[in-house]
Amino acid sequence: MTHAFSRAADEKVDIRVGTVVFTIMHFVPLLAFFTGVHWSAWIIMAVLYLARVFFITAGYHRYFAHRSYRMGRFMQFLMGVAGTTAVQKGPLWWAAHHRHHHKHSDDQEDIHSPKRGFWWSHTGWILCKKYDKTHHDLIPDFTKYPELRFIDKFDWIAPLLLGVAVWGLGYWITGTGVGAWGITLVGFFLSTVLTWHATFTVNSLAHVFGNRRFATRDTSRNNLWIALATGGEGWHNNHHHYPGAACQGFYWYEIDTSWYVLKALSWVGLVSGLRRPPAHVLEKHLIKKGAADLGMFQTHWERAVKALADAQAKAGDVAIEQKQALEEMLSATRAKVEEFAKASAEKAASLMPNKEPEAVN
Ligand SMILES: [Zn+2]
Ligand SMILES: [Zn+2]
Image (cartoon, rainbow, N blue to C red; front, side, top):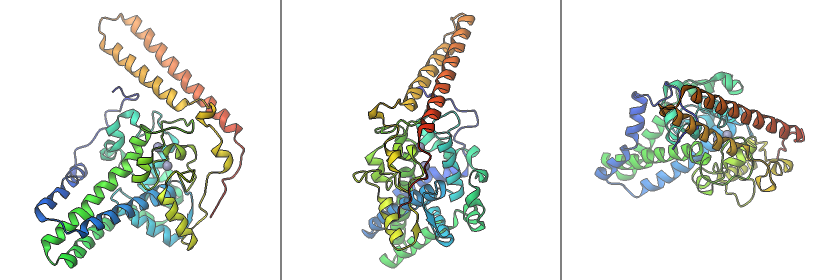
């Protein structure tokens, strides 16, 4: 498939320790065929999967990246530590990169847009050393806390302790070292790999498969299956339309389990100020009401332009002037489309009532 955007030479999977460990992690659970697996390992796996998906969805994403609700400083620290157990680097790294994604969704700058390649958006960009750094400038509101900077830097401590704890639990349950390893391989390692890919699908599949309710400037989709696997993150088109909400399911039938847990936590006072999309936001940019879907229009156009340019580059027998003229025309049209999209989005934004989001607790 032709990708709309090409990647720079330094945007590649770098072969290094992290990449090797990441790859091996996918095969480690298979060792359970040799150790055997106690039935309780499957329960531990399910619990650790669901819990860590929640810490990433509700913590790293909806809190650290989007500040869609409030927490006290100690709760915020606990949520950060809990998030690191999912082995997806630190909360500041994660949230800063995600803020960048919303700023540049599916444009040339978006690091993990599927427009740069599906596997790149899923896992490739994470294994590229160019994107290792935490961009503190994108997250000054949380970088100011030294305890968050500490867990962002030492993001391996909590997962290591969790792995050891699962092994200890396995030993307590089975009474043997081999039994403990069986429980660790499934309970810790397999659930970690599954949690990774659940999160990654939001960057890859949720920008490719599903329905679009809102005409956003990106390719985000609403997808029930991704929502079920990620604790509610599959309503990604809703989310790109209104990223400030603590819920991503905007209607009762859009299942969003992280939202239900956040609601429950708000009843006991552990979190507060959960934001929901205001009514007027739900009525804006609805595709079924005729809103121009510039995000998808732009996507198809970019792909066509790239395919034409590639074909031109390959066709050696085309006269050089013809080639140049076509390239100029393509880039001029592309610039016009981008200008048009920008102007439309600005116009649409100017029509939005300037209202603060409603805080519902
Ligand atoms: Zn997205
Ligand atoms: Zn987001």
